[in-house]
Amino acid sequence: MTGTAGALSPGQRLVTANGRSGVVNHRLGAGGQGEVYHVTLEGLPLALKWYHAHYIEIDRGLRGRLESAVRRGAPNASFLWPIDMVDIAGSPSFGYLMPLRGDQYRSIRDLIAPPPNRLDLTLAQRAHICLQLADSFLELHAAGFCYQDINFGNIFIDAPTASVLICDNDNVNIDGADASIYGTRKFMAPEVVRRETLPNSRTDLFSMSVLFFYTMLGWHPLDGRREHAIRLMNADAELRLYGTDPLFLFDPNDTDNGPVAGYHDPLVARWQGLPPQLRGLFIRAFGEGLRDPAARALETEWRAPLAAVEDTALACAGCGFEHLVESSACAPARCCLCGAAIVWPPALRIGSRTVLLDEGRTVILASRRTAARTPDGRVEAHPSRPGLFGLRNLTAFAWSAVMADGARRDVEPGQAVRILAGTRIAFGTVSGEIVACQLMDAAA
Image (cartoon, rainbow, N blue to C red):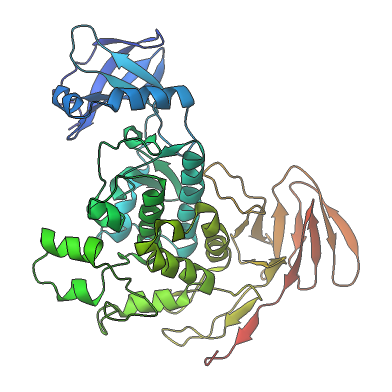
């Protein structure tokens, strides 16, 4: 729809609530709420969302929410947040300015799109996406807001970096205030589907868990045998599945909605390959959390199990199925799908945490995975000695390494330390040891 006619015209002047002047360039797109334009404000390219006049009549609290968001500012850089209000003389409508979304960003919905449009990301990249979202929604909720409508249409991904952008932040409201929307059906908490409550931070937690399940497994957590048996999905069926009678696909205590053999097999394999702690959070979110909003997993609880996936996922060289290392540095000797032997690299053990040291792996010492987070180390191959790998120091301070033979050396910023089992490294206040992965037999 770029360049087509809209409510605003190319070259039209605009003035923000803070007195800055700009000009409309062209229309980027349109939807049910309004239109989005490319504009220039004092030499800076931005996006302007301009609302349909009839939508403003429906959503009477819209302007107040936007003005509150502008005053408070974005929770973090992952949000395409309103930065200023815009009025145009003679128009019954208004809009707000926000940063432009780069062309490299794709909808998170593409993770489940049919080929060839599917966005194929590694398990580590998917975990990285979830970690950023968990931290972003934590900061939003800590500021007293709720998002109200977490769904596929609001999250965008830069595939090479697995960084995220959270859009449509005009949905955001003060937690506990009257909501203008209920959300998107398959992401709504059951009590919202049943119209027993309006969206709030606790229903956000449920929607976030659904998004995580979709991201990690490519499937909806409540779509099991019951959904598979439905020949015509209608409003009544959706109400039963997601509102009045929801049941987790992998509920350990009730298999009535369990996986269908021959249909959900890849999903079962991926589920069984996830760390027990991560499976436990999903079981809680879609077990007790279906009935009790207070039982839902908090944003901070997802950090450690998701980081474990990002740190230890390794693809089988034969079929590509990804496996994980346990915190004790135990790893399967053979692929659970094709049976091929898996060659595991050494690992860095930091307390209870394990990070694989395969070529190209980046090491982030902190538990947070924000979009702007710079890796602390990277595994690189020696330029002239095949089979020799080192961990390069990407921080601004020196590391202290003690080799297996007792030799000590400082690893200055930009330098690398050879990856050998038995080497101990002090990363400032954090210390780790390089270990060999312990292989488990097929039965284990």
